[in-house]
Amino acid sequence: MGSDIEHATTAKGNSRAAAFLFWLRKRINYLSPSLRYLFNTEVHAYAFSIAANVYLSFFPFFLMLLSVSRRWFRWNGAYEVILGLLRIHLPSGTDSVVMSLVTLVQGRPRLQAMSVFMLFFTASGVFLPLEVALNKVWGIRTNRSFLRNMAVSLLLAIVCGLLSLFWIAIATTVQALLTSAFSWVPGKWFLRAVSRGFLETISIPVAVSFFFVIYYFLPNGKVPAARVLPASLIAGLLVTAAKFVYILTLPLFRFREVYGPFALSVTLLFWAFVGALIMLFGAHLSVQPFWDEIWKRGGSAAAPSDLGRQARI
Image 1: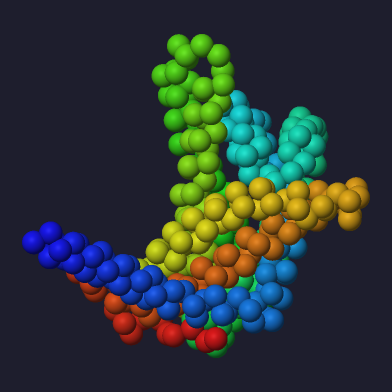
Image 2 (image 1 turned 90 degrees about the vertical axis):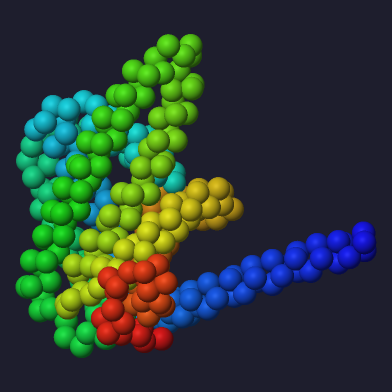
C-alpha cells in the first residue's frame, strides 16, 4: 500500500515536471524569433542610432520637465520627484548630472528654450530609425517622408512629455500620502526606503506606456493594439530588470579606467544602447502571431489573426 502511494506521488511529480518543461519550451519558442532578430547587423545599426539620439535628448528632456514643474507650475513636490527618479535611474554620475540640471533650471530662460529646440530636433533622430525598424518587422513597405517623420516625431515627443507629467503628478500625490502616513516613524530611513521602492515600482507603468505609444503610433500603418500591449508590458519589465543588472555589473566594465573623463558619457550611451535593443526586441515581439492564440484562449476576439504579419527574421 505504501509502495503504491509512493509510486503515485512520484508519477504525479514527474507529470508536473513534464508539464512545466512543456510550458517553458513553448514560451522559449515564442521568444526565440525575437531573440534571433537581435543578432541581425541592421538591428545593431538601428540601436546605435537610437542610443546616440536618446543620449542627446536625455538632458534637454529632463531640463524641460524640471523647468515646467518649477517655473510654470511652481510645484516643488513634482520637482523633487523628478530629481528622485533621476537619482534612482542614472547608472552613475548622479550627483554631477543632478547638480548641472538644477543649475540650468535656475538659469536663463533662453537656455531652457534652446533645450526644448534641441529636444525636438533630436527626437526625430530617435524616431526615424525606429520607424524604419517597426515598418520592416510589420511588413509595411513605405516609410514616411522626412518631413512627415519630423512632424510625427514632434507629436510623439509632446505626447511622451505629457505622459511623463501625468505619471509625475500621480507619483507626487502618492509621495505626499506616504509622507503623511509614515511621518510618525522615527528616523528618515524607513520613509526613504518606502519612497524609493514606490519610485522603482511606478517606473514600470511609465516605461510600458512609453513603449505602447511608440509601438502603436509610430509605424506607418495600422497595427493591432492587442499585440502591442503585451509586448509593451514585457519590454517595460525587461528594461527595468536590465537596469538593475547593469548597475550591479557596472564596476566590471571599468569605464573610468578605460575612458577617463568620458566615463559618464560612455556609461549613459551604453545604457541607452541596451535600452534600444530591448525596445527593438519588444517591437519584434509585438508582431508575432502567437498573441492571437493567447487572446483566443482567454476568450477575447480583440486580436484577429489577419491583423499584422509574421516578422521577418
